Each structure stands twice: as structure tokens, then as C-alpha cells.
Amino acid sequence: MNEERTAPAIRIDMDATHLATEPTKGNRMHPLPPPSVRLFVCGTAERGDDGAALSAVATLLPVLPSALLERLEVRRCGHLRAEDILGMPAGEIAVVIDAATGVPPGHVVALPIRTLGDTSGGPMPRSFLESGLEATFAAAHAETPDAMPEGIFIGIGGRRFGYGRPLSRSVRLAMASFQRVIAAELARVANVPETPASS
Image (cartoon, rainbow, N blue to C red; front, side):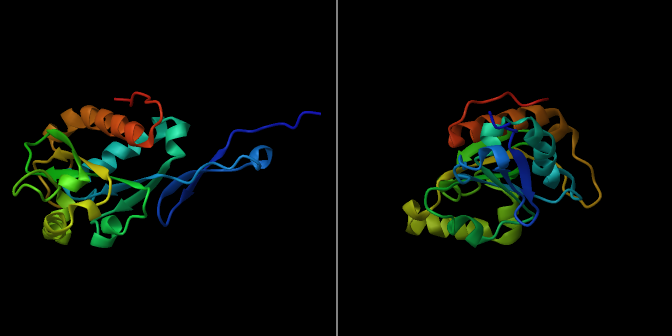
């Protein structure tokens, strides 16, 4: 008699906003590999374009393929701490999504994390400025570049960041492009087939 198999159920750990698949009765003997990509979604929704990453991920995650979601650990963080990035376990890849400084409003950038702080005035996650990580990363890059974690920063230039403000027109018009880059880079670093993001 064939045992009925059901699709894996998505589990969300609210503490770390960790998306993974939880084995059901029919697949207990086939555990999935642990997440290999740690996705940091930065910003504050109440501060205009500072909430761009939150807005992008809110509608992007539901349309990502399950094979990709199984590899992600998603963490929502208003501001990154140094230990969040510099304390990454070996073998894990960091993906930081945030509003970007040093780029025009609505412009999307994707840069290796190891290059952040390499060029003064270059693209940088806005949350790094808020938490003082810009100087930390610049120092870490100058002293020991190889100690920086593997990963990528995906950002979008913002125009306004005041409390109680909505996303600017520049960011709204570029949101589909922002989501396409996020989906493509996540698929690349997780080494799974890409599924186009919804606009």
C-alpha cells in the first residue's frame, strides 16, 4: 500500500523570520539541507524610502520557488549589527537588502559585501550609516579583506526618509526592477533555478 505523500509545509520562525520546510509525515526520511543563504531585510517601513526593502520582499517572497525558499533564512532588521555580518558561520552566504546611499534615487545596485567600505562615498546600505557599520566595514576591509563574509548587497537609492512618509515616486517606479535583481541574485547565490518575480 502506497503511503500518501503531502507537500512540505512552510514554517516561519517569527524570532528570526526563518523560512524553511518542515517535514510532514510522508517525507520524514528525506530531510532538507539547512538554509545556506541568510537574507537580511533592512529598514523601517515608517520612514519613507527606508522601507523599500520591506516593501519589495513582502510581495516577492510568496512568488519565489519553493526550492529557493528552502535555502533561505530571512531576518528582518531595522539596523544591522556588526556581529550579524562579521559573525556569519562559515559556508553561509549573506544577502543584505536595503535602501542605498551613494546612488541616485531609484537606481538599483548589487555589490559584493566584501567591497563595501572599499571606496569612500560609494554605494552603502543605509542601515550601515544608522548603526555606524560603515566605519566598521571600512576598517575590516582595510585590515583583513578575507575575513569579510561572502555575499551581496542589493540596494535601491532613496529620495525621502522622513517619518510618516510613503515610498517616493522614484522608488515606486523602480520597485519591479529592484525585485527582479533580488530574485536573480538569490537564485544565483543559492544555486537554484530562477523564477521571474512578479511586478
